[in-house]
Image (cartoon, rainbow, N blue to C red; front, side, top):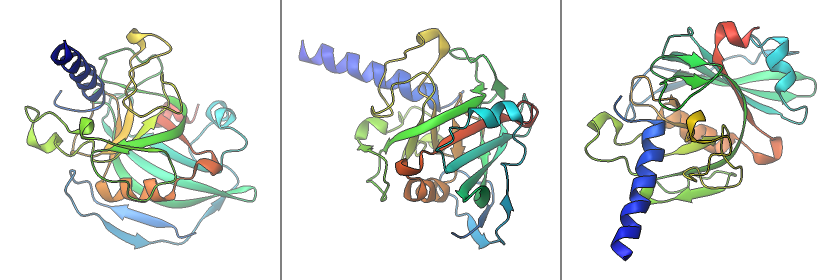
Length: 242
């Protein structure tokens, strides 16, 4: 009986992990597009203050909560592209300051405004960030952090994916805020997909998640602050500017 329960639990975790990856004050610019083990160079750049987040149209801008003072914007290269750029903006007074940016990846088939399970596209929208976790120890985040071996990628996946979930931040699409990233409950139903995370990059597109370098994940985990009500604004550039 106990073995059956363990097997069922492992199956649930496998579904969550496969939904996310697997085969099939200082302004900083982080250069390079490497895999999980790559070393990205960080170089300072002059701060630029803006009255609004660039490339984000009125529709998306209106969905950013007024109390949010940290926004991670993910600009997809195209509707059907897996390549994107992640930019962290911090609000100072009434202006937005670009703090850092990194090359990123999104769903293998690009983006969608109507995400469905296994469509290999990342959902377009504005999503809150509230929970984190990973295989590795807490790097010093202010988010609740769920450290567990359950985030270990299956070893039958390609080796390039073995470190995908060393660090993860749950993107609050079709999930319950305030629960660990691997919580299986999907309020909108299973068909709408879920288990969508920000996680360590493996050098190519994901099944629906957004991925950045390990250094970027450490930076974000140490910088994002629940008291600043951080959100992700993500999608292809055409949808974002609408």
